[in-house]
Length: 357
Image (cartoon, rainbow, N blue to C red):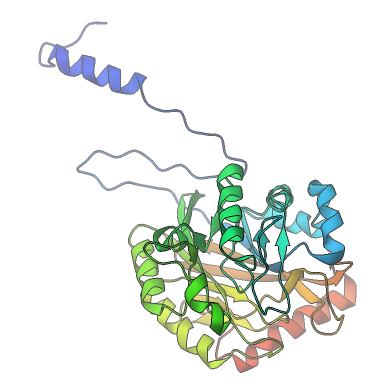
């Protein structure tokens, strides 16, 4: 190869060496957009295309659900087909990942599951979960240590929990169809006696707490600086109350003002309304999802919320209704499905949200 005289030989050799040592990109299981390279004096140019993200509600593997982990590939049942179709999928994992530990003193219900829970979720197409909820540390500090070790071994994406506050509030990041997506998890629901011991701090492991609004809002503002879509997944609401409580109505607009484009979550065991808050999208309650106890008329009503997003714009919402049968969601069909979608839309009436931006 012959080079022009004007190009210094040492510069050319350095350039060739840099090219030959560039790391290879790891393959992605779902379609992911690639960011174009840019010179230091140019802004990166990325071609963004709309992507979809699907959300399910609260998940654990207690009671009748535990035997399903014997075959992780089918543990979530037929609803996995809906989750796999989306570019991203997410649920709330409402359990400690441990087989040991000491149950939280005084708690009526404590949930735990083996690490095969991550295998089951991954097989169902769930890309990321939040463990920031009122069961994430049900087996206290030793259960937290086991959970963090399982997360590290599995390399499964989990938000809302960590060895310290920095890790607990750290967003999951992925570029999808050219969109830089950041997802933060936090809980607004914690038993009063566990708020201090379960909340992650600068030098103590635990959960990301939405009760510490300053830390949560700071994490959202930070994510906003270098993300196209910022999503906040929350554990919030009042059990069996079909309208958002005052804490939810207060926090949602603060998160949107800080830069959140989507705010979604659950805890109430029943579905709550969803819709637009100005240009952002808010879902106040996803209900149960993979859950051992359900009433067909209330806590057994569930589904998958799928949003189509491009950058900061939520272009479309779609509700896929289901009923919990044997602990897992089964899609509804025909006239029952049509009525369930109408019922889901009607839940918006007490939220202050709108059907369109």
